[in-house]
Image (cartoon, rainbow, N blue to C red; front, side):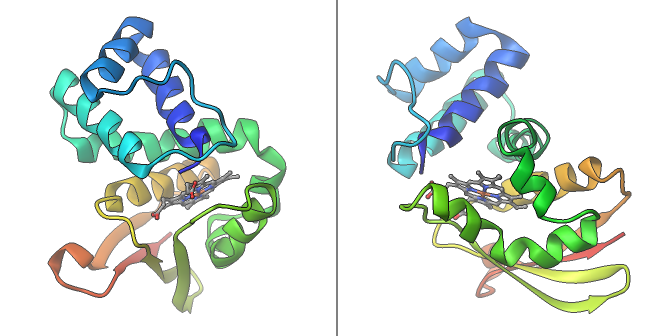
Length: 180
Ligand code: HEM
């Protein structure tokens, strides 16, 4: 994944727990990079190890860290660093999710080696839809839940998210029922 992802993890940890905690997480994860460069590619393994080490050090399940990271990504990283793209994504939660399948196409114009997930929308009704999350990466469902929760907050919208099909339970991919 592009370095911007690890940088955002760093920013979240340093903001909440300080520099010393971040250095300890990197040490435990066996990550020797001094800094992460936003537009350089790093093995996914580094991100997973950082989340694992943070979970171990802070005695918090990795799922909770991924959820918090999803919210942080939308509300801090994306909104502050890519405000124009987030604004172009839509002016309500429903509209943003309608456009989500094409979202990373625009990101890929800036980051050509992007290996993003795929999103699909089905069962669109006035205040609900099914969001399909398709990826080759494992274990990121709680990250998506955090992203969705961050988007609801961004639009000041009360929403419910239910995982109605789960890859972890044998489904082909995750499907969320989103209602607002
Ligand atoms: C301007 C805002 C955004 C940028 C710049 C961005 C960029 C990225 C980057 C760089 C990655 C790592 C993949 C790679 O490096 O190959 C990624 C992954 C991901 N993005 Fe985004 N993204 C943005 C917004 C969003 C939004 C709004 C969502 C969903 C609500 C989302 C969902 C995901 C997910 C779930 C992954 C994890 C990869 C996977 O599941 O395979 N992103 N994105």
